[in-house]
Length: 137
Image (tube, rainbow, N blue to C red; front, top):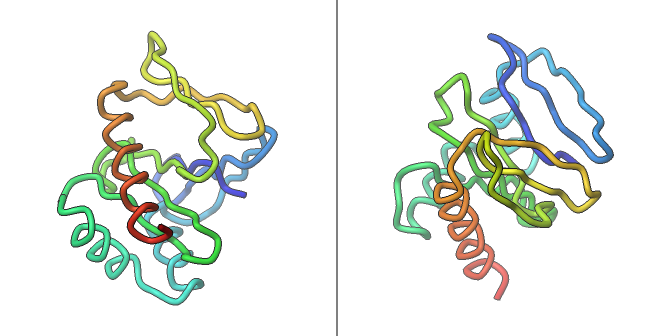
């Protein structure tokens, strides 16, 4: 289970997994996501285009990695931004306002502060909810 991806330094990404496990992967974050999509039978660009079409939006669209695993990740900023964090919607238990942004609590009770506004977080969560509704209901 990958809860979150965070770009670390050029050509590295940190994978945040269950129970606070962190893995540093020696690959650019966007390349990691592109490879992950390919492993599940599609391209990142195809997933992005589908998301934009279904949700009728163009910015910070969630990317469905796999229909089977239902891993749906959304970016906290432009995916080209070095400060971008990708959060897996599937594992979010709750979000709360925090002085430094938003406190995200995952299904294993691990918590991370993400430096975005609660408004931006709620927008992203709503887009993910709409995408799930489109695909699975």
